[in-house]
Each structure stands twice: as structure tokens, then as C-alpha cells.
Amino acid sequence: LTTTEEDVLDEIESKDIDFLRLQFTDILGTVKNVSVPARQAEKAFTDGIYFDGSSIEGFVRIQESDMRLVPDPNTFAVLPWRQREDGASARMICDVYDTSTGEPFEGDPRYVLKQAIERANEMGYEINFAPEPEFFMFQEDEDGRATTETADHGGYFDLAPKDLASDVRRDIIYGLEDMGFEIEASHHEVARGQYEINFEYDDALTTADNVGTFRTVVRAIAAEHDLHATFMPKPIPKINGSGMHTHMSLMTEDGENAFHDEDDEFNLSDTAHAYLAGVLEHAPAITAVANPTVNSYKRLVPGYEAPVYVAWSDRNRSALVRKPAARVPAASRIELRSPDPSCNPYLAFAVMIHAGLEGIEKDLEAPDPVRENIYEFDEEKREEYGIETLPSNLGEAVDALEADEVVYDALGEHIGPKFVEAKSQEFEDYLVDVSDWELDRYLETF
Ligand code: GLN
Ligand code: MG
Ligand code: MG
Ligand code: MG
Image 1 (cartoon, rainbow, N blue to C red):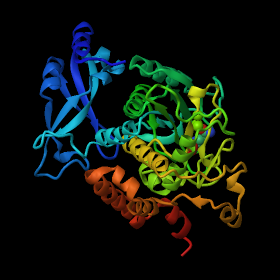
Image 2 (image 1 turned 135 degrees about the vertical axis):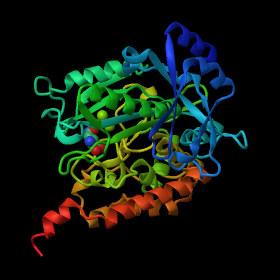
Image 3 (image 1 turned 90 degrees about the vertical axis):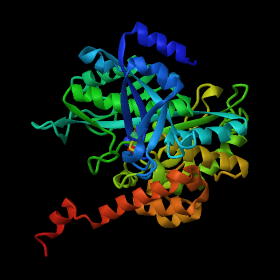
Image 4 (image 1 turned 180 degrees about the vertical axis):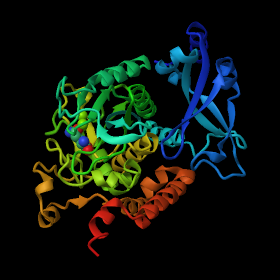
């Protein structure tokens, strides 16, 4: 379904919208807004809204700072939590244009994803994505700052009264539904204070937009209840971290699922096997983008349902890629289990798509699935099966990214180098820091 500019103007009128938030994201995936009075909507569609991009992470150098935002009418949504305060506000997600050339701005992550989708379209495919974002909710202290005290002490699929935060989760779901989400399910995750909310799959661009909206809504509504929702991948050591498993499938132009094959043992077509092979081949470099923080690598360790080894499986959850059981042919898909919700969804989806399409173009052969628990393999057994390990820290991941032309090029000429620079610096900052762990361990020992 497409919403036209006319539809948006009508809705602004009928829903009495006073303010429009024009949104876009920086390289790190942080949602940025420019707020304009709603009467400027028409002008925003025709001329765009100019803003100074020089202070946005990774966008531009200081001397070339003028950018133009053009809203995508399909992304119009009324913000549920602003309505009662100061007249209704709505948002639209924008594409960013370079004012000097009039062309799409290469530093816009949404543009990078559109390029990846375009490559798929040229090969005759549409792409569907569905993420499974997990998050924690923590209590705030007297000063309103986040603690790591969880909001409840429940466990996997526990019910109230232990799951004290279930009211908050219900309000989050109402908020998401108000913004147009089709919620499929929500549950208490394995760790205390950890949740997962699943929403319906959609095309890759819409889904990436949805991830940004999801994070904003979850945080805003948790905050209304004096809780801090966080998408940090591993806030508490020695219990499960938060992932964002990502399901993918390709559709042909006539709407058939290109990943489904009735006759295959796994119901996966040759196309799906080749796509999967591409994702596995480029997995180390993808990790830099799908797991972009120092903390991401504290999640990717054995024993907490997060992947460590580059392998696929139709059953076991220690593998990097899983083929979930599908009830109907249309649901045949693959699930990449490494991404975490701290990633920039536009960039993460873009690199996954390019890696998969590369697999199809090169007709890569997927290895055999591994059906045993890979966490329990020793090095020798992994070698025998030819199983590689994901990068073990952000530094190694950035090295893998720089060494992988397909994934690096997927980010484009602007974002590729900026991303590497920002993430190398982040890792460096971490390396020279002295942590509480070190003080606890050494201060009184030596
Ligand atoms: N939290 C786990 C992870 O880090 C996933 C748990 C699950 O969904 N089964 O990926
Ligand atoms: Mg799930
Ligand atoms: Mg989960
Ligand atoms: Mg999953």
C-alpha cells in the first residue's frame, strides 16, 4: 500500500497535526529529527527542507554542510505519546539529498540500503526482512539515570505476577500499533528484565524504517513508566544478551517465494542455498556492521544462544544461520542470528543483501548444515567440519570489513571509510581504558 503526498496532507488536516518531525539517521543508526510546523508539509514534499548536516555523525565535512530532506509519504505516522501534550505531532522518514548536486546524498544510510535493494530488483527479486529485536528494561535511580536493576525477575515466557513489566510491554505494543505496526507476538526473554516483540515482515526498506521506529517507541513508552529500555547488546555479564535475529527471503517479480523448493531436503531452493553461502562467506565482515559496538562482542560468546561459529543448520540454535520451520511455502526463509539491536538497520540489511546476492551471482555452494551443538565442539572438530569463528572483538571485525571488498563496497564511498574510521577509534578508546574489572582484579593484588 502506498500513501500519496495528497493522503498525508489530508491526514494532517483531519487529525489536526501541528508539528511534523522529519527523521533520518546518521551512520550509527541514531534517529535524528528536524521539527517543522505542519503547514510546511507541502513545501517539504516539493522543495524539501534544508538543514545543516555538518554536525551529524559522519555526514559531511564542515565546508559542505547544506543538506536537503525530502519526506517519504509512506512513512507518515502520528506520534502516540505526543498527542496530549502540545497538539498532535506526526513524523515522516526522509531521504537526504546533496544540495550542491541535487543527487541523493551518499552518506545517507537509507540510500545505501536502497542501492542494495536496487541490485536485487535488477536481478529480478524483491526482498523481505523480519527482525526479532530483544531489549532489557531497567529501573531508574532517583536522578532518573538508568541502572542495571531489572524491572522484574521473570524468565522465559513467564507470566504475571512475576512479570511486573508486562503492563509496560502492553503499553509499548499499543504505541507500536498506533504507529501502524502489525504485532505478531511478544514475550519475556530468557534473561531477567529482557523482552522480545515481533512484528510482521515487510520489504527491506520498510523493515529498516520500522526498526528505527521500534527503538524510539520502546524507549519513549518505557520512559513514561520511569523505566529505561536499552538495546545495548550485553548489559549484564553471564546472562543472555540482546540479539536482533534477522529473517530474509527473496520474492520473484510474480510474487513467488524464490527461497522455496518443495523437493529440497530443507525446502530451500538453489537460490536460497547460494544466498546463504554468500552470507556465510562474508559473515566476518558483516559482523562489523551488524555488531558495531565494543559491547556487541561480549554477546557473541558460547553458551548464551548467540552465534560464534560460521555454520548453518535447520535445527540448532548455536549456528549462525538457521532455516526456521515454515508452515507454508511463502514462509521459507533463512534467519541470520548474529545481528544485535545496536546496529544501524539500513547498513546492516544492505551488507546482508549484497553478501547474499553475491552468493547467487557467483553461484556459491553452501556447506552442509551442522546439526550438533557447535558450542560443544573443540577446535579440532571445528577444523574437521571447516567451521570458522566470527571476529572476537570490534577491532578484528573492522579488519575483516576492510579486507572484504563486497561488504566494504556495499557501504558506498562515503560511508565505508567513515564507518571504518569511527569504529577503529571506538575500539582504540576501549583498548586504552581501564575497566572496573581490571581494578577489581589487580588493584589490591599487585
Ligand atoms: N538472546 C539470544 C541472542 O543473543 C537469543 C535468544 C532467543 O531468541 N532464543 O541472540
Ligand atoms: Mg524470537
Ligand atoms: Mg529471542
Ligand atoms: Mg529467532
